[in-house]
Every structure is written in C-alpha cells, then in structure tokens.
Image 1: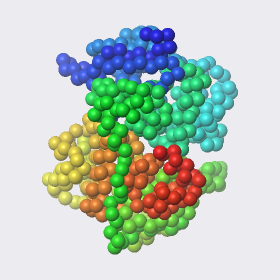
Image 2: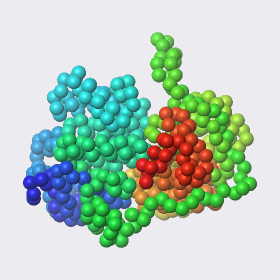
Image 3: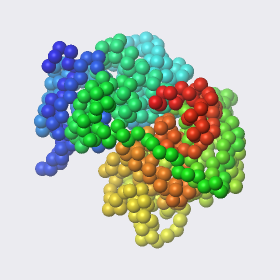
Image 4: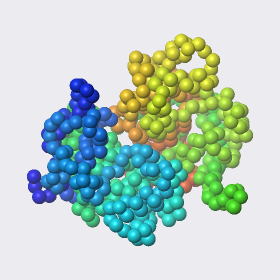
Length: 530
C-alpha cells in the first residue's frame, strides 16, 4: 500500500447470516482511494454500494452482517476486526459520512444549531460561542439562506434539499480525512447541486480529503470523479479513470447505465382535451412571528400569485430550487394547506371547500410522494397499502378489492404474488411502483408527482418514466410533475413553470422554454443540467 493510500478495500465479501443460512450481497470486491482523490461508486439500488460504504465504519449490526473474506484498511490500519474504542476515535473525527436519508438521519426533537454544535463540542472541543459562529459559517457555505435565523428551526421546518445541506454541513464540520457521501445530492436541484459539488472540491483541496462518492447521477460523476467503480449485483464489474470509462466503457452494464439518460418526447396531447385544473393567483404564506396570544403577526410568503391551466392528458412540470415553493404548491392544490387565490377542478371551485367537502374529490386527485421509503407504512403489507384508498372511498367485497389490487400491481409491473410482503422487502424502484399503484387504483384524473424519480438510479428511472407515459396515454391522466431533473421534465412534460423564492420566473411550453429560455435563472438551470 502506497504512502498516500487513504482507503483500501481488499477482496471484501459481505453476507447476511440467519441461522445456518448465509446470503452474500458483496462478492470479493477491491477498491483503492488515495488522499485528495474522488472515487465514484455507481450502480443500481441493491447492487451493494451502501452496504460497502457502511461497512467501512462498521455501522452495520454484526450479526446478521458477516465478512467471510477480505479486509478494509484506513491509513494502513485494518478496520474489520478493530476494537470499538479505535472505531469511535475514527468515526466522525477522521471519517465522516453523509447519509442518503436526511429526514431519518437528523434528530426531529433537536434544533439545527444543537445538532451541528454537538459535532464541534464532541469532536473538536470548541466552546459554544465559537461553535455557533462556525455553524453559521458552514450553513451559509452549503447554501442555507438566512443561516443565523434558521438555527432554531427543527428538521421538519426545512425542505428536503435544505435538510440534505444540513447533513453535508454536519459531515464536513469535523474536517475529516475521508468523506463518504451516500447520494448526497439526490434531493437537490441542479443549481444547489453545482454549489455543493464546488464546495466538496474546495474542501478536498483545503484538507487533502479523500472522497468516496456514491451516486446514480452520471452527470455528477463526470464533473466530480477522478476514478469510477461500477457495481452490479454485489460485484465490481468495471473500474477506470472517469474520462476513459465514459469514452470507452468496457462492460455491457456500464454501457447500459450511460445510455439510460431520459429521452423521448411527451405523450401527444389530443387537440380536444378539456381543461381539468385552473389556478388563479395562488398564494401561500406562513407565519414568521406570533404575538403573545399566538396570533400570526408577520407572514412569510412562500408562493406568490401562481396561475396556470392543465388539461386532461397533459403534464405540467414545476421546477426550481429546493425551498422555491414547489411542494407547497402541491399541498395547496390538494387543500392540505391554507392558501389565497382560486382553484377550479373539473369546473368546480374547490378553493373554499373544507376537509369534509373535499373528501368526495380526493379519489380523483392523487399524489405520489418524493420518498418511497417513508411514504409507505412499514407495518402494512403491500396489499393493505394499495387497498387502503379503496376501503376509504369505495364499498366493495374483500374479494373484489383484492382483485383490483392484483390488477393495479400488474399494471405497474409488479408481481401480484408479492402482495403479502412488506415495504422493507422491496427495492427503491419497486416501492415507487407500489406508491403509483396505490394512487392509480382509485382511477384519478389528476396525479401530483412530487420528485417521484429523484431517489432512483438511471435504469429504474427510465422504467418509471415509460410507465408514467404509458399510463397517461391509456387513461388520459393529467400530471403535475415536480422535479429538479430537467432531463426528466423535458421527456415527460408539455408545459413548464420555473419558480424561485415563491415567484414564477418563467412559464410556457416545455419545448419553447428549453430551446429559447428568456430569463437568466432558467438559462443557468438548463446550462447546469447539461
């Protein structure tokens, strides 16, 4: 091992052991990362990327996790059989990790300041006043606006992208020698993504830090990585320098990943399609300060004067930075948030309806959420999850309901024989199909899709897009598609609205916006997505 070698994984196998049964998930892999280098680890969900990363810090319970072969070395020190005291000295201090799920990784009971300051108090021994200054500086550096005012916020008060930026700040505060980043930019829009990538590059140069970057986004790999390792079904199928791998991929699976870029045009829109949704001057504000009697004194606008129409069989893309008001717009349209302005659905005004009055319309407006992990109840099996809406909105015999579940699962490409399994037994792509089946079983007219492909790898993302297009063509579904991936929006949507800080920056036909954007912000988003 050379002097500069920071991390070396040699002939490592990882298995799950239950009783006498042993299931191998990683097979004899070898990787090497030098100080100051970025190694990208890419592959489909379930390929073994995250299991490998978590094993470096021994964060997986053993048993059931066992390591039949191999060793992991950090700065020449073996880690797999290292005592817990030695590992505690390395975790956080010398090796930090950015986890994929920021909502799960952040403590919902503590403020952002408390969680970040704790890192500095424990690992670097700073006083609270000094820790506060460094926390604010780090939050500003990762792109949190008004960082000082956000210190008292709890995780649920941040957008998905903001939570991810807080996780990145927490990981780099200790100035580690090795940073393991597990899909750290999944929930981020392209402008913030570019900011974070630049930040990681700067930190590498400042500290000589090594970076193990796990991702399914090949555009990021092109911009950040020095070397790339491709994993499939627990095996490293190809390792090469970044430029060589993209220009001359050797393995068929690598070629398939590179060719899985979203492509194609939206489903043709019938010229006689009727208007399904009309929105006029939609505005949403949240109280930023309350009086002694808990009445709102100041209002912070989150969405300001948004207007559009959506026809049957049409897709509208809503794009912009995290915190720009995209998901808030969706919640307002679902009447789950108070809003000002007017909303008509299928000719019926719904802006003044209360929850009880909205209930008959709920089955006609369905939503697929961003995170397929937290969107499904882990205590229910798949049949119960998909059937739940039918039981609320329709009265049928159980046998008829079960038949409907089977039909819905077949329609989204799931095996009906798996309907008695639980969400934890499915991959991310399969969970997203389950969420789509749950929405479609009620035969809605409007489907609100909040970042439904952001957490999926490229090959699965392509499958979900083809599924959405085929369902739209078959049932003339209208989609409100929230995304920061402009390639996906271009492939699926007829219209696009670009939002920033709650304001509409630009809107119009998707083809026109992408080819001749008029606003500088839109031009920058499109340029960064290339």
